[in-house]
Image (cartoon, rainbow, N blue to C red; front, side, top):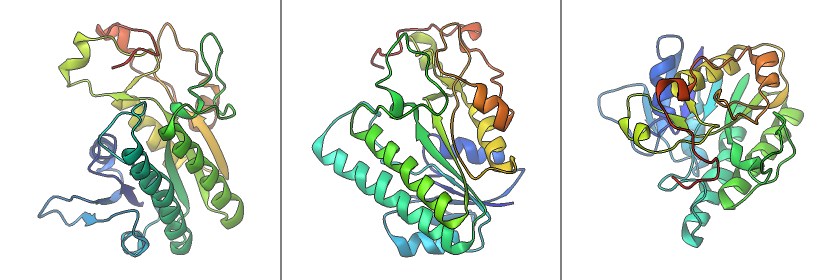
Length: 249
């Protein structure tokens, strides 16, 4: 399948590209691209013309572009403007270009921050009603709303994955500090995206994908039922230490 990954140079996008490059014909879009690799196309998602050019001939999209530079709980007026430009206006541009190009499947990277206001001990449903905390979470909620709009009005099949922070198992720094119990390893994240690209008969769905842990309070039944997703890596079994889910990192 010809798949466009937006934000392909980012923390999530570049690892998804490595994980899926043998299975699909990838086009990799970002504002900064490497030289001498024809798969890459320089694309600012806030520019509709650049997005339309990147979308030409594409069958499926994995939308990972996001305002980068700070974690989701960081608040700053100037950076929040960038968040709304990239996470909201940029997402609209990518969805509209996908609609015009006749894209069949769109996988949108949402965030657990959309429901971050649902505090312990609440057990959080896979598609729980939003309760965002902070500007980043609001932009991600707006992304889900736009995705539903396009799915309902264009017939494009759209899966919104609410994800936590993924862990690179080759990065030693996370062995020396507490991790949050909802985090997951990249192989499990790649599994979820792979399945979200391939699963048939989906109109619009919001699906939570988290890692397995002794303190999981996020429902995975929808991910299991619709995607066949089952986490294979339990981080605490690999020596990672679980901290409080609200602990700064």
